Length: 261
Image (cartoon, rainbow, N blue to C red):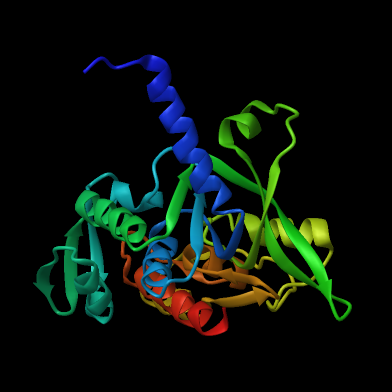
């Protein structure tokens, strides 16, 4: 068989365009392909919810790849083992409620299970803004404004594209980018104690893990926060290389969004 270079290019362009067109109107648009949003994407896909994840970096997975200080092992507590087992990730029981996972195997499995469940992942795409509309005189987040990450990095003046979504999930990790966009550009208050992004506290794994799950919720009409974005938005401690809270956060968000879509 003779491989024609232009045919290769054509099939890439047509296939990607088809994926993108099918994602212009979503039930749920998730920003950031970290572990919380990947788990959320998996459960949303399993429930036949139309969802897509937009990740600004080349590789989905967030900080989970690097384990703790580049030791590619991570800890997960027994509270999250049901999620781990459903996803098919291998765990090693270390006793006293602590388990470890190979961070490369865990992250790659999360990505694969999410995509196979039906949630598309678009990498190298950055959410630079949100769409909003007014319902009964009150503003509501109803979509995203997207650009190529290299365009944003180079500061090129290229207009972005807009997509609609019934709900947006900020899973951008420590920066809580979408929450900042909403408060800065819409001039509104979040459902936090300050009305803005409270900011992340120093590391306290036990409290941080609990806080992550407790504060996985709607932070503004149409906008949810998960994972470290929830900690930053609501002012909780970070937790370091333990990921049970992240996985449970994604499952909790998906469960609530499935009910509301």
